[in-house]
Length: 68
Image (tube, rainbow, N blue to C red; front, side, top):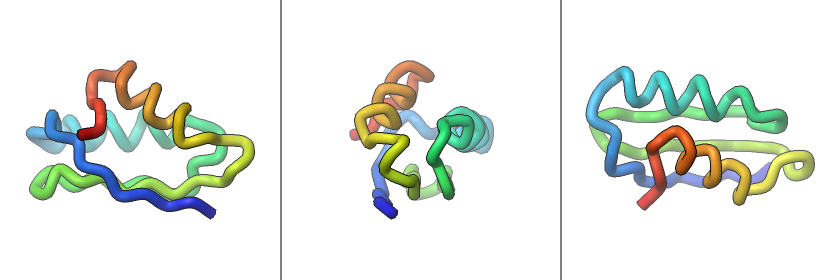
């Protein structure tokens, strides 16, 4: 099961982390997601297949929280 920790500079509050966690967790294959507003880091675990890292990154871009 792949796991990545990424920095998302646009995180500024709890609403940001909530949005990221809610939207990414909707993707089929995501097994765990945790966003931290203080460090602006997001930890994501997923099953491959059905989900690819590219799909996760595309959704982060789409919701306005691209990774650094």
